[in-house]
Image (cartoon, rainbow, N blue to C red; front, side):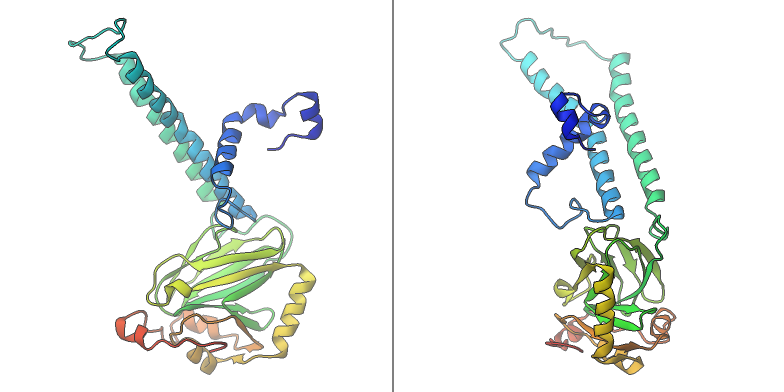
Length: 313
């Protein structure tokens, strides 16, 4: 929804401005009040995040249809029925008005219907299991939430990383997600929807970063002592830089086999990002099927024994 320079000079508003003045005004108000709130859901950097933000704006605009008139009516009633207004009619015997009842119930009903429609359409369009539109083959990334860190496995590239996931900008990413311990929520606010990571199950999420950049990712569900440090960085880079990163990852670092996974799965706090030069391709499946035992999860005794590694596991 933009206005071209030619339209602005000619003094003729674009069709989008004529059709959606309320939405544009609402967006401008939010932009002014939230100017310092960057890096969140209202600062989207991908198609899913943009669609989520649009749903939020549309929902607020729809709700303002009842909120704004109600507030104005309250102010008008307070002014009109003030003690000094002799023109206001006092009707102590008033009981019922069909017109008022119709107004009182029809507007909230319409608001609920519109909100329900926006939610229904958005829920289907943004189904996390639904691949993103496009001709580019998605990048496959397997995600395992642990205590208290994130493991990212690239099955096609044969490498893995901890607390940092690198993806090509403009390329859809297919995340397949599970948990090696308690339930967590995988969430990159600027890119879109969050989804649960659960032990013994796998979920899916399709995201895309439209432009290169660093995007904050986190667990959106409290999981014990190390929760405050359970975040990661999603780096969207050009395709050539992604290929270089894979080559660099293959040149150094440990190998993610079952022994390496068992060591990584131990509870640890504030783990700095590092990579694995090679992987056992059966690791993720073994975690999902619980062939590899789940971590102990948060407890007072386990948290007290958690380590604070400065580098790798």
